Image (cartoon, rainbow, N blue to C red):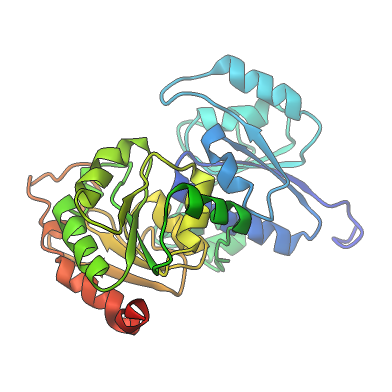
Amino acid sequence: MSQASAPAPRFLVVGPSWVGDMVMAQSLFITLKQRWPGCRIGVVAPGWSQPILERMNEVDEVATLDVGHGEFGWGSRRTLARSLRGRFDTAIVLPRSWKSALVPLLARIPRRIGFTGEQRYGLLNDRRELDKTVLDQTVKRFVALGLDAGEAQRGDVAIPRPHLRVDADNLAALRVRLGLSSRPAIGMMPGAEYGPAKQWPLPHFRELAGRLTAEGFEVRVLGGPKDVEAGAAIAEGQAQVHNLCGQTRLADAVDLLADCRQVVTNDSGLMHVAAAVGTRVHALYGSSSPAYTPPLTDKAEIHYLGLGCSPCFERTCPLGHTNCLVQLSPQRVLAALLGAGEAVIARG
């Protein structure tokens, strides 16, 4: 039977557990829709990610699985699997953990694809060996699982760029509720869920924010409840610097970032969100590598010193100084921000 006359396939993707990875997973969803027009894509994902997935045109269904970190959640997985039986032909498991492959098995999905890892031999029946020299980026690994095994092994992996929908009505309401000005906005994201070795010093963010407001910009500091104190340290006593950390939902962050001219961000989930709404990104890298998890956009400038001790990929600096970020000056980032005539634009 030809692909044209065959029924459209039904894919269930077991999604990742980080904001940035979930945004990058859209590259896989786009690839599946391009190769099998009319296919159906369901995504197994934690509840927090639903607002992101709802902004992706390719996702037809979200199957929520809320299991705490380190929790096995047998009952939740089994209940979800029962609800999915008979509804999908192929499962693609993005995480490499053993338990992430359980739902497709329990749902009796005929074909179950994933990379070999954590003794998953009985759970996956299309296991792929991961060659990290060929698939050297997280997003390439995601997309490769949607390709034939031979094609992926050759490294012939085209990466469609994520694109999140923006809700103009929600943005208008947010601007009123949060008391935002009509000034051109710069976003700042001081958080990084992975750990402090990925976080530019707060005094650097604060100095940069002050210089930007003097140039005529409004600064929006975005993040979750864990970032409230960091946002306060940046915004305190500075007019036109808004600490929005903890005041917005993830879907709100999508719209607010789309409304910014540029953003300054650690290597974080919101960095990938900003890239996916088309905003110019200034990405600050220290312990992590821009070669491994770059923002997927042409409108990005990478700030990375490449010291001999980095990237170390540690949560905290093994040497205790985080020079890879401390020595990345606010003046350097400011010059990059103002490089495209933005100072003239901001001052009117």
